[in-house]
Amino acid sequence: MNTKLLSLITSGILSAGAAIGLSGINAIGITSLLSLHCAPAQAQDVDEQINVRVYQRASPAVVSVIVGNGTGSGSIISPDGLVLTNAHVVQDSRRSVSVVLADNRRFQADVIAFGNNGVDLAVLKIRGASNLPTIRLARAGAVQVGQRAFAIGNPFGRFAGTFTVGIVSRLDRERGLIQTDAAINPGNSGGPLLNSQGELIGVNTAIFTNSRTGGNIGIGFAISVDRLMPFLAAVREGRAPRVTQRQRPRTAGNQPQSLVLNGVPINDRLGPGDNILPVDNSFFKVYTFQGTVGQQVAIEMISREIDPFLILIGPNRREIAQDDDSAGGKNARIAVTLPMSGTYLLLANSYEPGESGSFILRALASGAGRRNRYRGENFILQQEGVLGPGTAVLPSDGSFYRVYSFEGNAGQSVTITLESADFDPYLALLGPDGQKLAENNNVTQNDRNSVLTVTLPRAGVYRAVVNTYKAGSRGRYLLTIR
Image 1 (cartoon, helix red, strand yellow):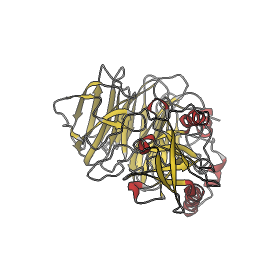
Image 2 (cartoon, rainbow, N blue to C red; image 1 turned 90 degrees about the vertical axis):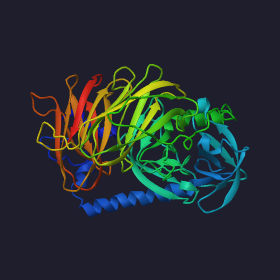
Image 3 (cartoon, rainbow, N blue to C red; image 1 turned 45 degrees about the vertical axis):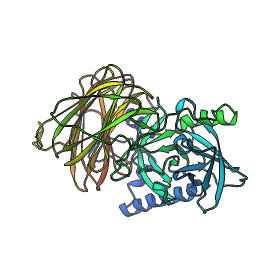
């Protein structure tokens, strides 16, 4: 049995599922064997049952938090009325806020604690409460990339109890962050991110929204349960700050700037007065550019003063790529083939909270419809990158990995290649439901690169997992989806 396949399955990063288009793979888990005997309609029914179960378990303990004219969300975590939320939701209150339960009961609550070092957390205590419904916290370290994620909250302060579904698309254990594509809009801030058991795995924090539309741009962040545990211990022991230590999050004052492909590089600066990412108190700016399907774009953020971080969002508000250190040193680089025509958003961020400094942003592009070197087909996505310190680590074996997303259609045939001269590549494909569709280690005995050819079963967002086969391996790679 291929032990790498087994470790990927048992780690939880990949849900067990039938391997498509592969031979000689027998490391399929029990849930995969069961799924082989289920018709698609039955599988859909199972998904729906999970959704309904999670909502029924958790929604009674999700509250709306009202501070003046502002609103947010929160989770009741004790029967006597402790409510977990974001610091930025309540930091302008005069210690007392209104809390509205799912059954429309309204209570007054007091702000009793804030997160240390500017972490975007706060705890409220509902006055005179008892026997309230609660949300159970998941155990620390249990969250994995690829697992399903559910968000409940009060988006825009008008739609209490709204339920959205996605997956965990990235983990940043160093900063204690969970990235998800479950829709998180203004008003969802402070609400729970849940696993399939209805347990809280994170506290949702809204990110930049375009003021013209006001909605989610395709990525959201949550503060991981790993970071919640020490905070709640400090609250119980009376060690947590009673006054917020964080800066006020800003998004409305700095609207997107234009980024010209093949234009003059932009010299800019991140620091006080810029947008602040609520989840970790870091500065960011947003740029837009017009892209054409098939166009190959390389974007670099270079700085000697900060640690740059880039996130690229497509016209459909889904993440295309992100990067920390692929341009050498601490500099960031994204190289992709654009999957569609339209307006793209680029977030230029500092990796560390509160980092200030200047940077250079440049974007180069080739013509649309450029052919690749394999079959004359257009790329869906092509990404150069680096696996090594600073990237996510697979808990089962300590190997580095990254995850990339692309849009697919039912019946579409895609070929995914992962090439590296520095390490033995390992490749897996997740479907729109987070289930594993296929995985591969070596093309042949003499070619250690990885390749997958898969017919996509349905329309949706698919994710390619780029991994080193061995723990400790590192280096550059090229991922191509065509």
